[in-house]
Image (cartoon, rainbow, N blue to C red; front, top):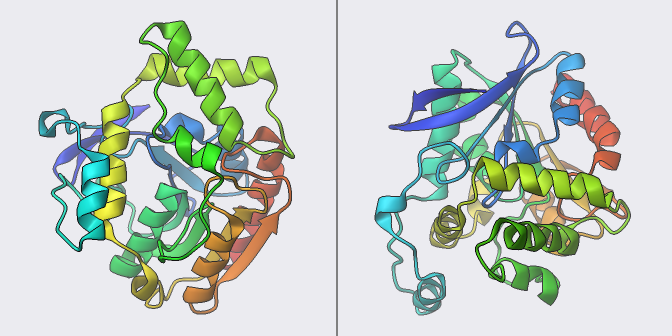
Length: 294
């Protein structure tokens, strides 16, 4: 892995494949480190002829954090938004989009296929609209437009976003991480317990940093819906979503596809709100076929 300065911060990133190939930028979701993109997916896409870049968003993993801003009052911010009041936040999704394009510029990449999952899908949507000159195509995975009135996730999945570990000991953090990934995961593609534990341990040991996820959630809330913005996207767009996503129901993905002119959508039974190894071959095929055609 490597680090570079972009948009006034430091960003940790990793690349796969040849720099001579078209770039494909992988953007992860809320509180999720770059390691949540399976290496098998990155290597599979590189083998299909893409220069793959995955990175830590600001305030997560090994990229610059905003700890000096403090821990936000998420519930208080939500209450202010409901009243139509402004929410104070250190950054917005637009700033996170500028991080992504800044990273590309630092790597001397003019344009890339923007592939984002969950909050990463939101960031990719903003990039496609605000930075069309950098966007070869848009792939929005398990994401949403943020339109008010869309179906909510299952209560137990939504509750896990705010749930806390029983304590601060490493084993307690691991148990909490396993529970989170199990609750939001794919019912049709259950994780092997040992593999899941290894993934959770790796991410906790790399960096466990809940305050950053809270500030990212604040950025999502303060940025508002992207309904009008999505209507302006000109790049070829593909929406991928699981029929069994417990956190952002498949209707959220369908809404994104309905808003972007000419967008295509693929939904998969049994897929939840994660990137299970069993889905990797399908994702490699779908992403490579779409991006090459774009």
